Amino acid sequence: MCASGKIILIGKRVGKFLYLVYNKIKIILQYYNNMAKKRQERTLVIIKPDALNRGLAGEIIHRFERKGLKIVGIKMIQLDDIILAEHYAHLVDQPFFPRIAKFMSEWPVIVMALEGLEAVNSVRLLTGETLGRHADAGTIRGDYSMSVQANIVHASDSIENARKELARFFKPEELFDWNCLDSQAIYAEGEGEEDDDE
Ligand code: UDP
Ligand code: MG
Image 1 (cartoon, rainbow, N blue to C red):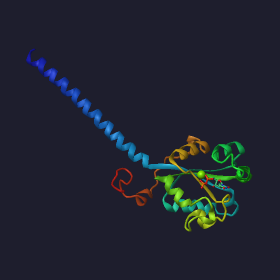
Image 2: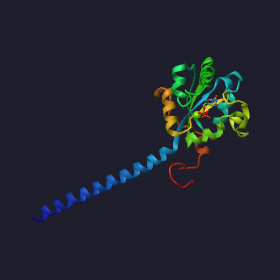
Image 3: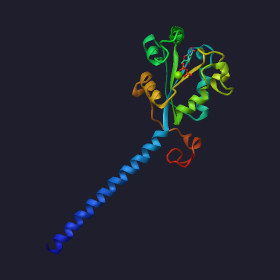
Image 4: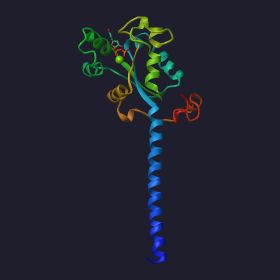
């Protein structure tokens, strides 16, 4: 093989090697990017009829906003038996289910999609335990509810359920990707984009 042929061959091999390295780096960067995105979650909150009837809707929304959760969707809707049987599928066989279904469909509710780092868990912590009179003071249920049924809000209990519930109550075009100017004050720079904060 002549000298120029060798140079072309070496060039091809180097090119192939660089292409492989580029692809590997791309995969690694995508992986870390996905890890960062994973921790930005969305979750569903329903402001229940008892909160609306007691004039607490604004107070509840305010609490989530003050925490630093971003509202990415919000609307008032009237629930019906079909959507409630789906939403409370884990409770449909319970004797109290007809009572909850009546309560949740007799008045409108406000559904809200909230976004933030580990939003699902964060919203559950703000919500407090199911039975209002046992919920910790400082939580929404602990501060505003004495009841098991009239417990002010629903909040998704896992990332998987949050995904299903958001799809149940919101069309894709009703959820907004928007850049909240306050996020620079709510989170540290790069927080949630790397594993250095926990
Ligand atoms: N609920 C009720 N009686 C019960 C248990 C639940 O009325 O004994 C209602 C209550 O409004 C609760 C909802 O059903 O918020 C869903 O129950 P779940 O166990 O999922 O509690 P949550 O996730 O809301 O804390
Ligand atoms: Mg639940």
